[in-house]
Each structure stands twice: as C-alpha cells, then as structure tokens.
Image (tube, rainbow, N blue to C red; front, side, top):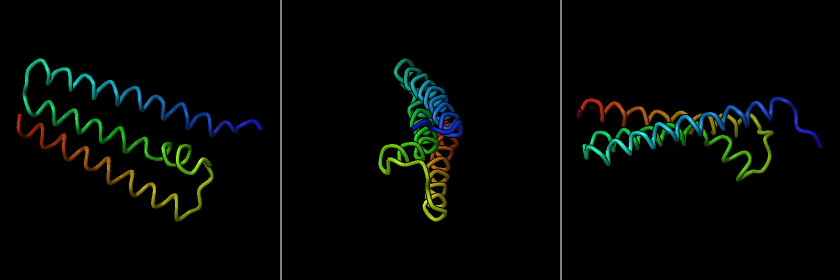
Length: 100
C-alpha cells in the first residue's frame, strides 16, 4: 500500500532535523574535545536533547507503535513530551551560555 504524501513529508522533515541536530551536537562536542571547556560539553548535551525532543514523535510512531495514525489523547501526550524535552535542551544551552 502506498503511503500518503504527508507521511513522506513527515519522514523527510524528521530526517532533516536529525541531520541538522546531529551536526550541531557533533560540532559542539568536537569543540569541547578541542578546547576542554565544560560549557561546550553542556551545549552539545542541550543540542542532543533538542534533537531527541524533535524526533520523539517519529521514534514513537514508527518505532514503538508502528503506526502513524494517533488518537487525540496520544498525540497530545506525545506533543507535551516533545515540548518538555526540547525545553530541557534549551535550558541546558542557556545554562551553558551563561557559564561561558
């Protein structure tokens, strides 16, 4: 059965998020290894959390549940969890920048 275009746009958008977030995480961590400043390690962790938060929906829908059709309550709970993980990542980056 062919998947609808929304599925493929969802997959492409999350792939781009993974590439961009993974690149920022790797770049921050490489900078930490080179300079050995704790704030750069924290920034790498913050970028990793933001990337994970953005990818939780695809991990849950296609990896755990193996279906991309979610009910309203399930979708709301997943969006809440996404937002909390992304917020935690932003807080870690804020802390890292304030310590720099």
